[in-house]
Image (cartoon, rainbow over all chains, first blue to last red):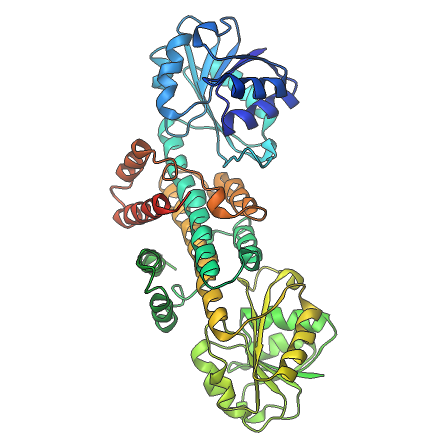
Length: 254
Length: 254
């Protein structure tokens, strides 16, 4: 099976490495920026290209892993290929591809990727979708080679999952950053709070989060909440976040 | 060294187990509820008591691990003891003890405890404070026996740390719960999102969170933000949280 990868960002990079180490044949890596294409292509033994007119036309699979609003533009160059064309976006409808190419699909890894940190792909949930059953079976075969967790999800569910991921990943990370801001302003180092962050995440590996909520808000400890809010008097934005999330915790059914 | 533990909640339980497995002599466990006192006392080979008038008077250390607003009340029964009296609260001033007892201190473990989940105490930051240098040295000696991370922090810094912990632990856990709510309403299981939560926390073990922020807000991807907000139309409270946190992410210096 010959695979063409269109994109060289975080998702493209981690996916390329995972496919390559599973012995898949990546023949070409495209990026607008030839240096980026070359760097990734070199890692996985592919050719680099920065012109969409030069995309290999006879591959079995085309993986478009570019910014959401560029997916349609890239797909327009794949109208004549007979291979399956997938994107890796959580929010983009399959029709952005299906309206342009012969065989369309989605191959969405639910994870937060940084170029600097390796992740074990086998533990990453892969959400797949395809325009027909044959293509779905084909994608599933590939997905199960690189991940233990493969989910067939339609576009609506995938979008819900992407939204949930913002709450479970992007927002918690921002709260870690706000905690660090509070610590730094008082001469304390982020290191002191790392074990707490690790344990908080670890706790929900075997429990549901609503069953292990701790802190002043869930205890309705108004005296502590009041003290905390007054400590944030010179950071009105953090005060607002504290109030908003504490109120939301109080509203959760117990 | 003889230790009396006043309290039988999550912190008291985990602390008692850690001290006991380090060979410390817990002589008495107090709780208003005798069954609770007996259950914990049994675990660590201590006597159970539910009357503050019957507290052993000749111990070397008294650890008060009760609700914040009950600390002063409990301490009032320890006015005549010569041993050191500490509390385990992040937010309570040392003076709540120092105004009543001869020797006062604080022994605050920065962690989120559930009775059902064991934690390795050695990786838990212990924040200590005492009313004089001798007592501080005594507390430090004990603290370093059960934890690799011992911090001498005054009350102001401890309160800052407790506030930061709400942002780094209680609020992220609530966001996990909201993610689960979104998933459940759409027939998806929390299991699918657990690897993402684990990786998000793991990422900040070696990085600062502000350097690894991902998601639509940090990319200023207004089209995705708009779609997400409209998906939350029937959950105005989650919509408000989404908007508030996304705005805050956009305000972070890059």
